[in-house]
Length: 121
Image (cartoon, rainbow, N blue to C red; front, side, top):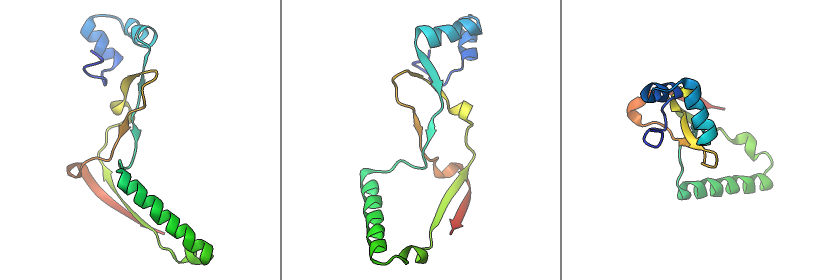
C-alpha cells in the first residue's frame, strides 16, 4: 500500500487492512523501518545554467565591491513571489526509508496562484 501511495496515513492504512492504529504504526516504523517526513519546500528548482549564471553575477558584484567600497550602498534589490493556496505540512508528508533523501516540493504552477508580492529594499 505504501509503495502505491506514500501519502497514506496510519489511520487510513489501519482502516483498510483491519488492524489497530498501534499495530500498523509498529509495523511501519519498527519492522519496515520507514518514517513519515514532510517535503522540503524550495522556491524553485534551478537548472545548471541558471545556477552558473547566479554564481557569475555574484562574482561580478563581489569584484565591483573590491574596486569601489561604496558600491553596495547604490544597489536597490527587489524580489517577487506568488502567494498560493498550498497544502499544509501534514498534507505534503509522505513515508520514506531511513536512507532515502527528503522529498522536495517546487513552486506551484500558475493556475494555483492568488496574489503577487513585490518587495524592494
